[in-house]
Length: 425
Ligand SMILES: Cc1ncc(COP(=O)(O)O)c(C=O)c1O
Image 1 (cartoon, rainbow, N blue to C red):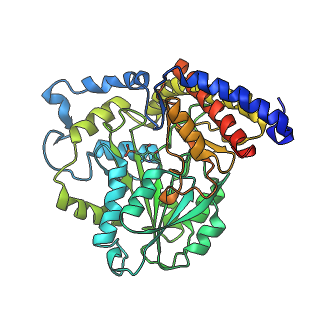
Image 2: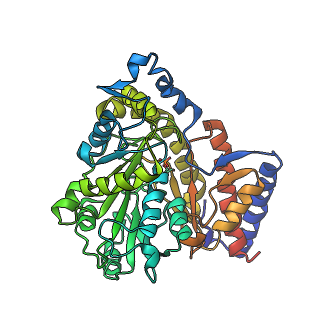
Image 3: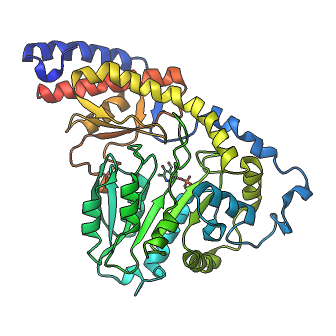
């Protein structure tokens, strides 16, 4: 195959006619396929459904002397705090175990920062003239939505192969209006990047002008390898402490992609002072999270080592799906030179960069042929991708034969939109 950039107009026109015919053929099949959100497949949910029967009798419902069925223990069952401390490498006293959604707790932290301020806030953020959030891009749409919802100005920070551009981050935090940065440090959403040790050190050693500057360290994919061995990852909480910034970081994780998505358990890990501050605040809105679910989860998952074994089961289901994506792109698109993409070893996404100026069109062509992708632009604040290039592929949910069909449609749409652009159609 010749790259499109080396073809004559005549050759491009011929390609266009052939690709259009292929696209019309696919469209006529009346497909209904979805690669929009990172949902575990049914097979993955079946893998962990032993959770449903972990607590059979009243006697099973105790963590030591604590009855999980009753009110109390707002920061979580001690066994659940110990579980997350094991997974994340921090201390149990630095863990607040919540309900089923880490996103809910992230949103709560932001909401309280605006209404009451964080531990070192001179005033609630709603009283500030302006509040700015740093947003590595491409990034997670729901992080951006929270910032937008509370009226923060969202500043894009480009991702590099080692994490966000730290020169920019260090520069921006000199502005006292910059109050927060949102990051997914391992298998970032959507790029699948693991932050380098240097990047993590630079995060811990930030010198922000705002005394209440906060890092949202969304470690949603901390043990989510689908290829190769588990990659150890440092504990950001002790690193911030050592750097003299003990209260600067809020780490989040959940079992949404370990057990049941939206039916698991989540946690916030932070300094003990922050955990105390937020336990008091959450105590206003909550008497107790669902400790029965916490107990069922800990009984089933046991500890980090056992959870890593379970993750191998997920990996065996996920890996062939990511292979379908990379095989299609390498075979159909790479020789044409019209897109590039990442090749993650964990997480839930493939980040695809279509020919600049075509991502929206690719999305629309896919949609019209019955394949739903995450909206073009969603990986940027205000849904504005300045290059109109990035698309997030979430291959976990469809079975392999459906995924192959969806990738055929996506590759065809990438070609068609590139040819339309090159031929000014
Ligand atoms: C980076 C990231 N954080 C958080 C979440 C949501 O997690 P939860 O279900 O715990 O709210 C997701 C889900 O896709 C995610 O990709």
